[in-house]
Length: 425
Image (cartoon, rainbow, N blue to C red; front, top):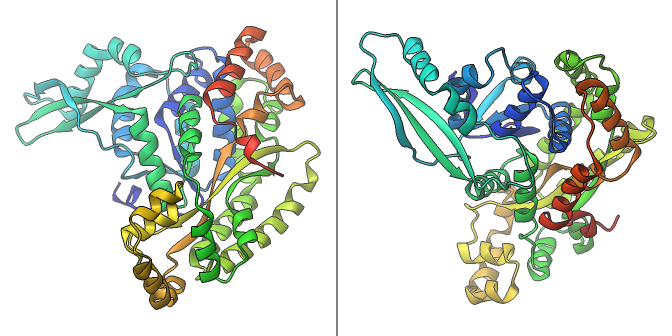
């Protein structure tokens, strides 16, 4: 499994939350009925599964998954199995690193590892179902993400520990990892809301951007247009998928086929990220975007009623840049006065002049992008959502009341930063 554990992330990849996978397998594996929140879970997963080349989770989540699956999903996990089979599920460090407390410890007394694990599952099975499976509910915010992990020590003991990671820490770690990599995020609705809210807190000062535009010989207008949120038209993937189904058992096969149909799309995403990463200047990074946009315009023409994905573009300013921490703080400061407190202008000017060629050569600033499901469009009274609701009733035997749908609308309006208002076109 060594090749599956990575400290770096490949191009066009996504971190996928174990909570989201649990929810998908719970409903699509026949263990329970979907809720209105599941509409988002399915859409965000389908978008990522078709659009992203590789998927990552954390080692702690992997450990939890292997230990709890027999109790929570005794007859199998169709979505997890499909994900592993079609893409491989790799593991990245830096997402969940919280120490745990021991909840179970026994001497193996000659038992195999599998036998020791089975004894734990038998004893803790009911607790695993009630305490470690979270189905999305926007009326019950998730502040802690409980996981269990295992180890076999040199004293022949089998130890299970509980990890209680706060959702705030998870989101902070995800933003930290994604700021210096190409990784996307695929999260359940509650964590998605927290993620969007945190991203919205990191603007850049105009003075900082003016310095970067001069340094990299680009127009400030072009740099500004490349930052923030934008709409990316995409095929209505989930509606296409649901329309092809006679029953939910067909989802893994049909979804794998749909992924294969859009291989060209993923190849172009990989090419774009590679060009942005390897381009020595922001000017060339922006030119790579223009080439991709030209391909994309042609690609989506065949779809009469496309959906829209959100793209969040940001500057990745490397922490090991030649500029010191105060200069980096200035470039990323949302409050110019705060940034100015620590700046020695003679020092920053000298460094920019002296090391400008190093910036070009070492790519200290990268104009990255992250894809996000457009939750606002998804839950509007549009043809797309109406079609999905009809398919849900046909396939799952569920229909959602106006009050249930209103609950989601209220969560979006009251708890999630209004991204569409930030998009001018």
